[in-house]
Image 1 (tube, helix red, strand yellow):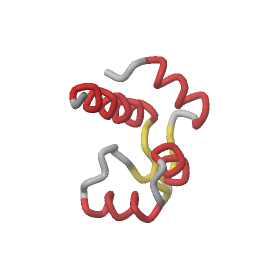
Image 2: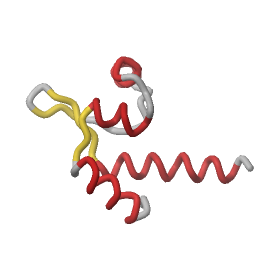
Image 3: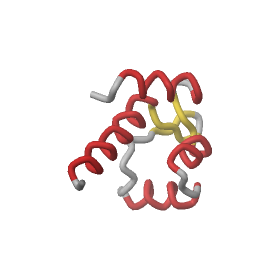
Length: 76
């Protein structure tokens, strides 16, 4: 489970769901890169459609960031 502090920071800054623009900003990726990865099934964060707009839940984003941190710590 993602660290609650990370979840709180993301939720405070972006709310409980992040749109593609917000994901791009947070992950430092281009929107087209995110859409391409979602289409290819390789985007590492679960997303969903709501009224034809795509979102990711803040908890899934936090879990992804924590997983990246854990992976980096293991490679040192």
